Length: 182
Image (cartoon, rainbow, N blue to C red; front, side):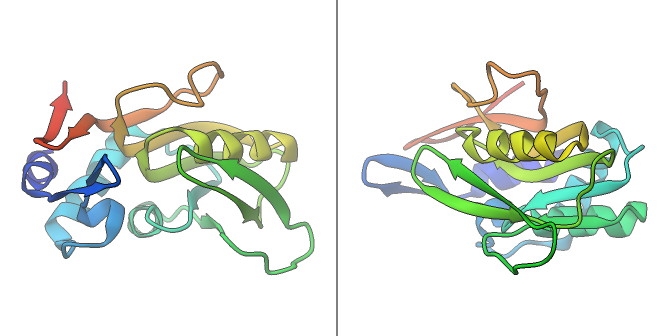
C-alpha cells in the first residue's frame, strides 16, 4: 500500500465550516487518479476480501471506479446502489442518514440468497453503509464481506451491529494532515 500511503500524505486538506476535509483521488475524483494507485487498491481489496460471492455491490458514487476495476479483475458481476430511482420492477428504496446529510438510495438486481461483497472508498460515519446493510438484509441477501479503502477513526453507525468492515487503511484527518493508524 505504498502508493496509497504516499497519496494520503500528498492529498490536500481543506476547511469546510470548521471540518477538516480530505480531498483525495479515490474519494473525490480530484486530484487526478493515477492508474498505478487504482491498481494497487484493487490488488489490496482482492487480497483482503472474500471473493467467493455472487455479486460486488458499490454505492454511488465514489466506490464505483474501485468496484468496476475489481469486477473486471475477478469476473464477478457489479451492482451499483443508485442515488435515484429508475422505477424498475423489484427496486428497493433505502433511506440513509450520515453525519452531514439525509437522502434516498435505490437497490436493483439483488435477490434473496445472493452472496455479496460490498466495496466502497470511505467509511466515515457509517450511516450510508448501515442503511445499505439493513436494506440488503431485508431483501434476504447475504453480506459475505465489506471492504473499504479508508476507514476514518471514530464512532460509526456500524459499531453496534454484526457487520464487520475491513479497511485497507484506518485514518484520521485534521488541519495538519492525515494520520495513518496501523
